[in-house]
Image 1 (tube, rainbow, N blue to C red):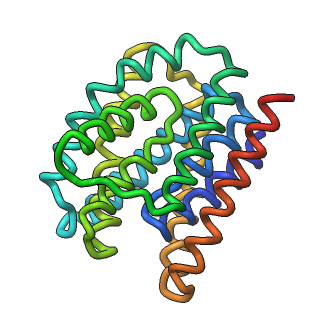
Image 2 (image 1 turned 120 degrees about the vertical axis):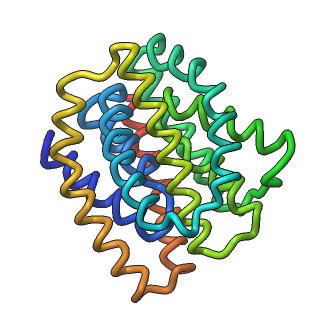
Image 3 (image 1 turned 30 degrees about the vertical axis):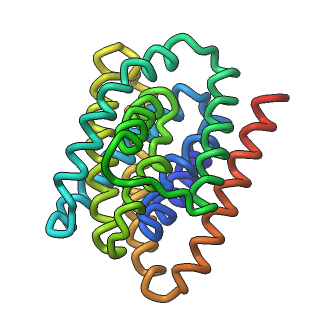
Length: 237
């Protein structure tokens, strides 16, 4: 189980470093097959939180703090509902939910779905991201759509996404810990996976400098669709 988990964390970190999002989208459905969905959500959330905190600090000058704070506030409203779903759904159903959510959100990002960064649409996206944070750990795509709607430059997009994912991840992990959902296995998986994820992040940043970003984005999104489809088949059978 551990070698598979480490390989998954490595690949997910490369995706995150290149695209600015996608760690949970890659890690959660694949890790669910190796460890079970509850452990997958918590372990991937812990590693993702550490990575995004580091990236937020490194790129803090590019973060749109007002936008991040506004979306984070709305996300906090949705987290209790996601926590209830996480605790009540059976492992099989939760794994299927993760697969469907990842597949649907990935297709939305692939299609270039955009919303306004202000107004009720952004509030709804924030609440949805909060629900996904504590239920499946896959809150990236709706936040991507919101930040993309601002039409910002890539460095601002990547930095603002890191801040959003760090903020939602911090509140989400704290909520899971307070509810008693975080166990020793989750912490052990995250502790073992973090160094590997940091290595993947370093490799991803090197890839950014040498590969056509548009082409790599197409490859990444194809991989996300494939991983969610595999998870869905695993959950069904």
